[in-house]
Structure formats: C-alpha cells, structure tokens
Image 1: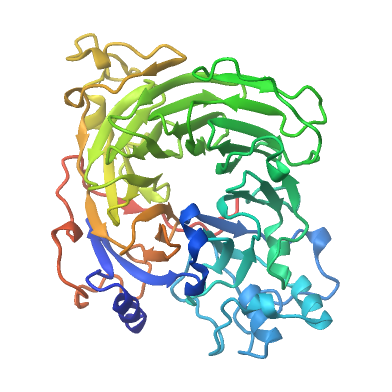
Image 2 (image 1 turned 180 degrees about the horizontal axis):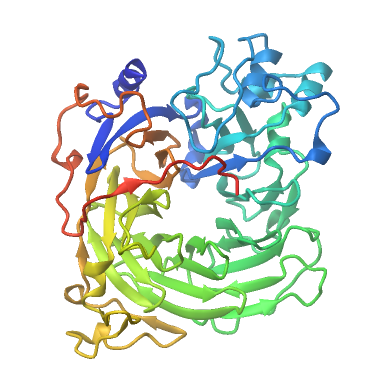
Length: 549
C-alpha cells in the first residue's frame, strides 16, 4: 500500500496521503479515475458527480440455471478476467458494504475498461450468469458514465457508457428497488433514463441497454437536468430537478412516453404544484420551486421531507406527501449549491457561494449554526451517519454529529456539531422535561419558531453560533465536487472525475502507525484545527454484517 500511495502522490505533488483526527488517522487507500482521453471540449458542460451503488444478490427467480459458486459469481471484474483469460478468477466480491483493504484482485492482469470490448456468444452468456453483487462507484465525465468496483484497487473503471447526443450530469441509485430498474441518469439535454445497473454490467457494449426514457428530447422540459433522486420508500417514484426551477415527480412503473402537459405557470416567484390531467401521464406532477436553477435535492431518510437549494440562494424544505412548503432560508451571499439531511431527519446542511457551511434545524425551522473554514465555494456536504459520538446518559439521543464538506478550494473539512453549544442560545431544558423556547433570548432570531411556509432572510452572524472545523485537509489538486461516507471510508471526487478513498482509522493494517513518512510539504491547512465545538470520547460503530437493508 505504501507503493500505491507513493504512486498516487507522484501525480499529486505536495499532497499528504493521510490526515489526523482525534480518533486516529485517515489514510489514502487508493484512487479511481477514467481514461485521460475522455476529457475533451464537451467536458466543460458537466461537473463530475459520484454515486455509490450497493448491488444486492440477484433475486432467486433470476438465478441462472447453472449453480453459482463464489468464483463464478463473485463480481464483474473476476468474470471479465476469466473471459479474457487473465487471472485465475478466484477473487469473490464478497463484502458487507464499503471497501476493504484486505480484498485484493486475484491475478496480475488489469481489466480496466475492457469489459466493453468483450464480444461473442460465449462471453455474453457467461456475463449474463454472474450475480453482480458488489459495491460500485458511478461517476460521470464529459459524455461518458463510468462504473468502478469499489473493492478493487484498479484505478480504471470496469464499465463505460457513452452518450452521443448529450452529457450525463447527475445520477442516483436505489438499493431497495423492487424490480430491475435501480439507476437514474439525467442528461444536460433534460432527458432522463432509468436502467438496471446489473444489466448494464452484464452487457459488453458501451450503450445503455433496456432503458426507460423520460422527457425524451425535452418534450416536457428542455432545460438541463440538475439533480435526480429516488423517493425513499416511494415504490419507484423519483424526482428530477431542472435548470429552470421546476421539479418533476415521476413513477417508473408508468410509460415515459405518454403524452403529458401542464398549465402555464402564472407567478414565477411563487411555489406551485400542478398535476397531470391524465392518470396515465408521466410525470405525474410539476413543482415550480423557484426562479433559476435548482442546484441540489435531498430527501430525509423516510421520504417525508424534501430539501432543495437553488440559484436564488434559498433553502426550501417541503412536506413531500402533502406537497407543502414548510420553511426556507437565505444564504449570506450568492447561490446555495448543495444540501444534505442528518440520518435522524433533525438537521439539514447547506453550502454555497458564501464559502460557509450552514446547519438548519427542522424543529425550529431556522439556521442554528454556521461554519467558516473554506476559502472558496462549498460544493458538497454530508453527515457521517457511520460515525458514533457520545450520547446523553445512555438515552440514545445524539448530542454530537460529525459531518464533512468539500469545496472549490480543494479542501475536505470535517466538523463536529455539539448539541449543547447549539441549543444553549435557543432553548432551556428543564430537568426531565422537553426543551421549551427560551423567553429570554438575546436576539429576535431565537424568539419564535418560523411560521410554516415562510422564507426567511439570513440572520445576523452575531446571532448564530459559529463552528470551526475539526480538520482541514487539501485532498485534490482540482476543485472538489462531492463527498460520500461509507462505513469504512470517506470518498472525495473532484470536478474532473478523479476519486480518492480515505480509509477510516482502524480499518487498515498499518492505519494506526505513527512512523509513516509524510509525502509533500507540510501545510497549515493539513493539520487538525482546534475546534470550539469539540467533545471527548468519539468512537466508531462497528461495520454491520449486512449493509443491504
């Protein structure tokens, strides 16, 4: 692994291969990327985004007639290695989610993107028999969608899907899909596809197979897709955000080519919902969210609430089943670019062009903290749902959250959100009782809960607690576009489509060694930052034996 890290840093001079936190050292495990030739003139139209896909075992009714064995159904890379006569095919893609440092590809040949070049009836038949269970990284660059095996140390993707008429710009995966279609792909042209990830991996070509096509040629909305998302527990429902401020609700069980039209929007400045006139139409509803681009969409884990952020600088939170705007708030400056929910649905993160990370409370319907640490636009935020801090007297209530942010300053920042320091300005908590609003607030910002349906201006920074980052680390050479947490690692992706996997403390053989040499010049941005929002005693949840739930 030291050799791998050295090779990585030869391409990224001055970057460290680790960063420190109070609970230990995060180490750069490996990188994922795409063929350099893919970046051509069209790349400027799309920023690379990352989706993690946890592909479950093939359902029993789809099991091939030939009994599966670990070596014959272990994963795409193993199957491709056998088809091409490389390696012994003994590596089985067995895992509990996330990536594992001990999982090494059998054989010495690199398969890379050669899956698409495999042809012939025997190859096709063999590929259709593999189970495909695994953890995959899906990311876009220029006019191509790439799929990589997270558990392999090979940098190159195992599959590439080319789009001839437009660039893929966003994608989403539904691990709980009841039928085959579990992957959404949105294009710059406004077109949307739903496909089966397993079928794409089985097919040797570079085109989508068995795809359902929605908004074909921009028939419903010809502005670019900006975000796609499955509705949690939505039985195949999904939403698509567009650059013109409209969001559409689809049902994948309905024909995507059915005729559908909506009335003209009377007031572009107001939130409105229109439903399709026919029960056979798809999309089934249009939400006019805002004037200008919808930059990001995020559902609470139960699917009850939807958060959006846009070009106008507002976070908006909706009751999704009721189609009702609950509240919203303004950034301090410029557009908001990203948003994310905590796993318990209590807090929302936003980031944007004001270089700040903001924490919003669902209960109080307002901003309760802001974080300063980035030197440029914040392009990605996420709560670390696998990290476990101390709880309050064994009650199970979270008293501290860990979250991360990335920005165009090429930095990854980790933050600790401590409830005691956030709650104090807002609430008085009687012993044994529920928190109540404090009548002695120092600012009007804390005096009242925001009325339902109200969009609030940004409060004075003096009235809102300030967070400082726990860690600030420059992780890429290029501006960053997103981050994702798994139970074993943190993944970062830059705008150009290069991914780095940072292994959590305790998950690598030498991850706790302090004798490792530092690669690159030391930087003040790479050292842990003393945080006023820090508590003692953080620990990690043990990886679950089964992650596909």
